[in-house]
Length: 289
Ligand SMILES: Cc1cc2nc3c(=O)[nH]c(=O)nc-3n(C[C@H](O)[C@H](O)[C@H](O)COP(=O)(O)OP(=O)(O)OC[C@H]3O[C@@H](n4cnc5c(N)ncnc54)[C@H](O)[C@@H]3O)c2cc1C
Ligand code: FES
Image (cartoon, rainbow, N blue to C red):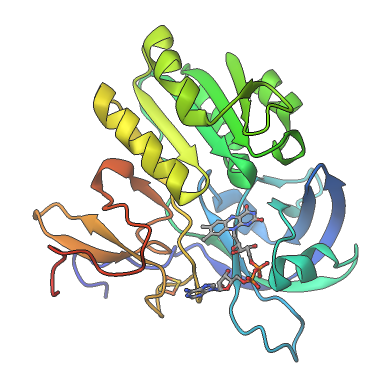
């Protein structure tokens, strides 16, 4: 039985051998489609998968986490999971080099998902780089609830903005920012969001992207007294709550700040409760220090 207040792995999660059905380069990313079981029906925007990389004899023992871009069940009953993968280090480069028909070992769906309001609200979705991946399915869910959905996608350069056309189709307004000015507004997402919050009377922000971006958004959200649910990206080793590598200092309901596992209690968290820190040291005031 679960200890009270002690989060558990998603009970719908399964570990399976999954066939790659599609692997296509889109800008700086690979859009990959995986055949899965009916676990696809249980995946929610914000959940992630943990994939074993490098093959059975690999020295890369740690699974890599990837946000679920889309999940669906095809007409013939086949479950599908779609991911957006940036080939950056050894694990992601191995994954993106896999061919259609190859198989991988994956565990999904994992982690918390974005909270969906029961009443229509005015929402702002902010994605940095591949952090936009879980936001498109979220946009659809919010629109189906009658919410206004504005979106900001930011990246260092145009090729790193994922799916700008899809973004345009699925939301009320789309603003793009790039550091080098190669698309949209030159600058960072934090330069444009105060105006969007004011113009559209935004009530809730959903974000996903680099930690520095999430910290900057939290400060802005707090200054406007707007709720901010962010999907954090702390390094994860096991992805299933066992190893404690993914912990962040997070304010609890009892008023203490505790090192909290972002793979189980996250990745979606209340931004205002996270003690944002760029160092990997435990900050003062954390329970047990
Ligand atoms: C919730 C979540 C969602 C993500 N979604 C996406 C996504 O949609 N698309 C995408 O491209 N990437 C995503 N990532 C990043 C992805 O998991 C990998 O970190 C990234 O692809 C780099 O991995 P690599 O093997 O290429 O790089 P490498 O440098 O070879 O390995 C990085 C890996 O090393 C391990 N690691 C590194 N530092 C530490 C540490 N201090 N403690 C423990 N382990 C460590 C982790 O397993 C990490 O994943 C996500 C990460 C998280 C946590
Ligand atoms: S990644 Fe192992 S406990 Fe979170």
